[in-house]
Each structure stands twice: as structure tokens, then as C-alpha cells.
Length: 308
Image (cartoon, rainbow, N blue to C red):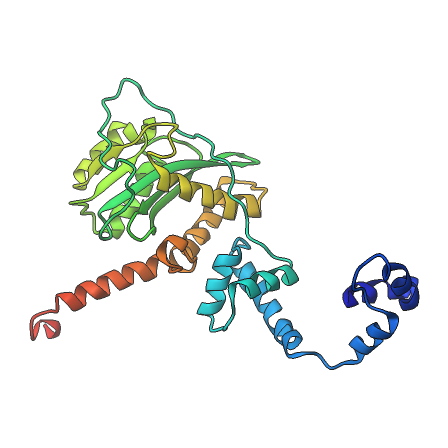
């Protein structure tokens, strides 16, 4: 109420505003009450709000402006602020920020009916007991002023880390998804023994050049079905978040190269800074670091080996 009067007092005057709105709005201030309120020293709550609202706005902007109440609350706690979830929501309203809503899914793959397809080894169970046990892959697209940019992601199911990605102006297997796979394989030392590679039936993933590379690396191929978001649900969800958090927020996009640079920055943020609700509000890098730390403590090196 005080803020409303402050905004309109120069045009209408305090007395007129209070006289007109007093009978219409239950609990509205009198002119005397307004003057008493503005003459008081700021309360402890107001001082805290004045401190936290800019911080909320800053952190929200640093995270692509996509966090809702839940993630902003977790982020504020990680920053050392003793703050509740409802308080976070109230401060977000004061800061004029809010989370983004996911977009609808668009199908981007085409099935080759003449190809013998690998079995579905995942059966919609997107869980893994360690990194490099199960990777999920999918393709999405971005409309630019110079044509379509196609984006391929390879994601580790255990940590939800994007381990490989590529942006290209074509869907050809040897250019788009294969380079994403090679990036992920390089990060794993080019040895994917014991890993299951899961994708849909898209012709770019079923191409011989791609499937041969999976086998060469020691991985086992697995496929869901085209047009069924449940059979490749995690990969579809990552595509959806990418479109929601980056593409729709920062467009329009002019060139494929512009999308590529933005995707590079987004993948770093996703892996190193973005809080994931499925990971108990941790980042993928934190999850993998904790896994290998636990593994090392459970299997200490023999005496003297560390100094060799």
C-alpha cells in the first residue's frame, strides 16, 4: 500500500488516494497512517529484504534466468544464506524473477525400417550404479536465420553429466552424432567396455558408421522406439531443458556458429554449476567427484605405491 501511494502521490495526492481507496480496500491506510509509516525507521525484515533481493536477482541472472523457487532456495543456502523456501519465493516476486516452464517436445529423428535394430537393454530404467555404465543420446534442433542447427548430446545417466555434444548444420551420422560420441569417448580414454549406449531408432544413430564405432569402443548398443519419449526419457528431458533454459531464453539465433558457442557455455554451466533436483541439488561434477572419492577411500593404494 505504501509503495502504491509512493507511485501515485505526485499525481493524485496522499489525501485523495486514501479517501478514495479506504472504503473500497479493506485495511487500506489512512493518510495519517501513511505518514507515520514512512517516518519510521526500516524494520529488520525490510533491511534484510533490501540485502537479499539484489542477491536473488544476481544469482538468478547468472543461472540463465531459469531457476524457480526450489532451485533458488537451494542455491541461496549453498551461498551461505539462512533462508526458507517460502521466503525465497517472496523475495523472487520482489526481484521480479521466476522459473521457466518446459516447452513441448518436437520429434527430430527418422527411423530406417530396413535396418536391423539393437534390443532395448534399458527398458525405461534410467539408473546406473557408477559413471560410464549407461549413456543416453539424442538429437534436437534450433531454428536460426541461416537455417537449422542440429544438436546432439551424450549424457551419463549416473551423474547426468553431458559427456559429449556437437552442433552442426546437418543430421548426417558421421558429422553430427558421431563427433559427439567421439568427444565422450575421448573423455573416457577411448575405452567404453562395460558401457551401454542407448538411443532411439533414428537413422543417424543406426547408420553403420555410428554403430561400428560403438562396437569398436567396446560399448553395447541399445535402442528405444522413435516417437516414444518414455523409451529415451532422460535424453528427451535434457533436450527439453536445453531448449527451455537456453534456446527460448536467448533467441533469436542468427547462425549455427552462434548456437554452437552458446551451447558450449551452456554445457559447462550444466555440468559444473547447474543444480539438479534429481541429484539432491548437486552438480554432475560434484556427483562424479564424490563417487571417485568414495571409491578411492574404499580401495586405498598399497603402501608406497603413491610415491612411485
